Each structure stands twice: as C-alpha cells, then as structure tokens.
Image 1 (tube, rainbow, N blue to C red):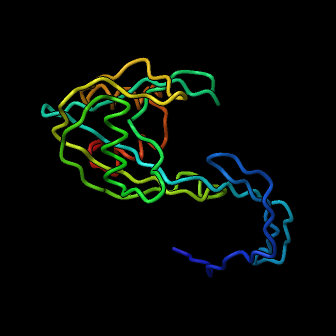
Image 2: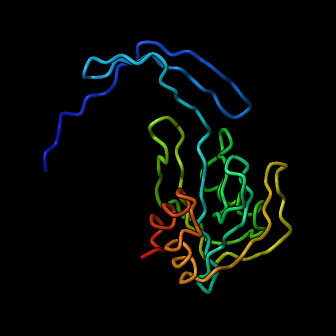
Image 3: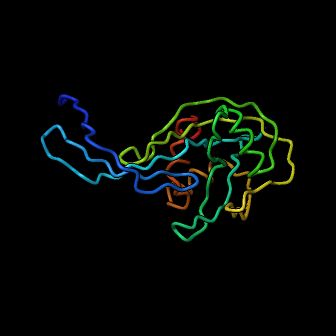
Length: 183
C-alpha cells in the first residue's frame, strides 16, 4: 500500500454566512497543501446526534418510517436525534428512543461514532445499541417529526431491505454495522 504524507489544509479566514436555531454555515478561506487557495469552502456546524440500534428480547430491530422533507419522501429510519447541549450521549439515546418510539426501558451501550459527511459537516453521530427494549408508552414527537409507524422488524427482513435499497439511510446502515447486527 502506498501512503502519501498527510497534510492538513490551512484555515486563512472563516466567515459566518448563516446562523439558524440549530446550524451555522461558514465560508472558509483555505490554503490546500498543493498551494491552491479556496475562498468559499462551505463548513456546516451542527449539533452531534445519536442513532439507536434498538432490539427487543426476540432480536427484532425497532425501525421507524419517517417523512424527510429535504428528499420529499418517507424513509425507513432508526430512532435518533440531536444530543442536547450538556446532555450525555446515553441519556440522549434513552430520551430519543422514548420520544420517537415509546420504548422506555432497555440496556444501553455506546458502540462508537461516525462522521457521515466529514467533507463539510462538523457533527459526530454516536451509535448506541439498546437491547431488551420494552416499556411501551405513547410517543412524544416534536413538531418536525412525522413518524407514520414504529415497527419491530426481524433482522432477515432488514438485511433484505438494505440489499434491495429499500432501507437507504446511510447513517442507519452504518449504525447497524457498528452495532454488529448486520453480519
């Protein structure tokens, strides 16, 4: 294997282009190792998030079907959401699982993290595996959450849906791989 010397880009200047309730968009003036200068490289600062790979006592995966406005369609998803400022990752996982699915109990373990769009986004996705989930109660959805169903899905069906491109959320598929349930 041939490896090149790893050199970082040099940040010359950063300008705030947009600030919203959740995101900041910066335009960076950067100098690349090869001498090229880019004056408007976009960097998006977002809160970190948690994806929960939740399994019931029979090994079925908790999946949601949620509308995603940016792509204008419903998608199969794993429960998850932003980690609130000052909140611990496992606490965020418990909160998000309860809010989106109604499941309130289980054993939670942090499995790892991903950077799902490291070319422009600064956030980290934390992967939490929850086993033996139970304690169903009513969902407590945020205004922006349109979840049409919560399903306990056998893993053979999840794998088949991924192969058929019916389960297409990349961070959810990465989360399942990191949690060790795809292989």
